[in-house]
Image (cartoon, rainbow, N blue to C red; front, side):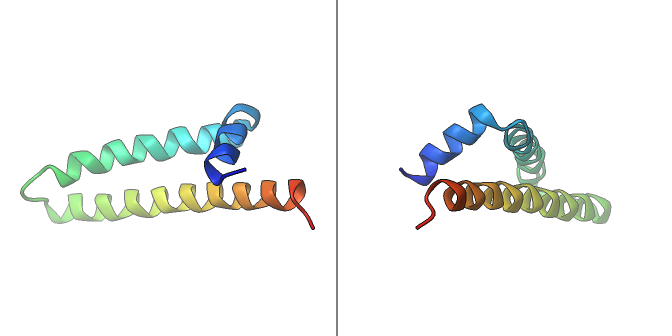
Length: 76
């Protein structure tokens, strides 16, 4: 089973995983708005960095859930 298969399973079975995925996608959309601009104010730069950090936190937690799934379902 691939990691992508596990992501699909968790997306169907885990409310937390689904919520994290939705939040991660929302943050990605927000970042796209910043990256399409030629110039950002200092405040916008700070906000962009804050969003990047939040997005990384969501991604890290999703990866942790995938690792946990692998560990509980494929323990040696």
